[in-house]
Amino acid sequence: MNSKIISIGSYIPSNTVTNKDLEKTVDTTDEWIVSRTGIKQRPIADSSQATSDLAFEAAMTAIERAKIEKNDIDLIIVGTCTPDVATPNVGTLIQKRLGLSNFPAFSIEAACSGFIYALNIADKFIKTGESKCALVVGAETLSRITNWDDRNTCILFADGAGAAILKPTDDKGIIFSELGANGEYADLLHVPYGTSRKPEKSSKDDYFLRMSGNEVFKVAVKTLEEIAIDALKKSNIQSKDVDWFIPHQANVRIIQAVAKRLELPEEKVILSMDIHGNTSAASIPLAFDRAVQDGRIKKGDTILMQSFGAGFTWGSVLLEL
Ligand code: UT7
Image (tube, rainbow, N blue to C red; front, side, top):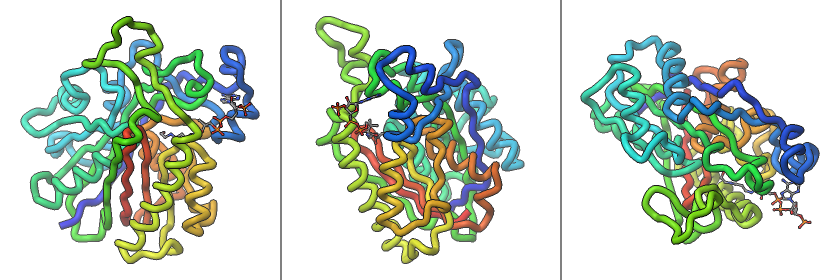
């Protein structure tokens, strides 16, 4: 028994912060941001919206497009590093808003790899027969843990959500999926303090994301090249047979380096950081949905997805839609 994505949905807040807007608040330029990252604008949630609100909207769209009844869902997994509150988890918050109960609903903390981690776990639930219809979400409000005075990070991060419905299939569906992590790199991209670890003297900056961008960049390229080649090799699929490459949307230069190594032409690479920024766990389903809605990705296509994020965590999923 394999699992298959039968629909995808997404949601981005209507409020957009452009590079020109950021020129007014930090020492940066539109030209620098576009050339170094590929980002032109980023959706930012309004103060009334929490992660579960974004996640719920994306989930509702995915459910409608799947043409299933809400009651068919028997598993919810949410990848997020910006949950509404410490507890209850975002999975149960969505479960409640959907009017559902009595099945597993939980969140995965794997930063930018959250959606790929959640997909991998849902695939295993379906393969073992424990789930017949899973809702998998990647959702973030990174704006809440971003220091808007720090030009190293505030130009990158954004808010949004993407969701997928998975069902069992006799077709190929998810062909290959593998996860990885290395905690040695924890300090290169992290929020120093939070729910349980507290500073002796608190300052607002202690609760914001900090990143050694250049060092993250180098490990990201190396790791993403390795796991992409590995995914193809282990699935016995050649890169020319991949129809679409949907990587985590952190930096266009990282993506171009990996695509070049895989000899994938740029027409096969799905980019969405131009309008979405880096939405961490939401970035892959947001890019995925954009390319389904504009007609590029179609049923039967072979898709390679891969993520890399804080932890470091990483993962890949190769599937036939
Ligand atoms: O999503 C999870 C994983 N995250 C990633 O994969 C992110 C990986 N890292 C990156 O994407 C890039 O490292 C950044 C986009 C964060 C930074 O790009 P970079 O090309 O690595 O820049 P840099 O940090 O090496 O800085 C180059 C120069 C520096 O000036 P000097 O020392 O050369 O004079 C920085 O001070 O650019 C300067 N700089 C800026 N200039 C204008 C740094 N940030 C900015 C800015 N605007 N926002």
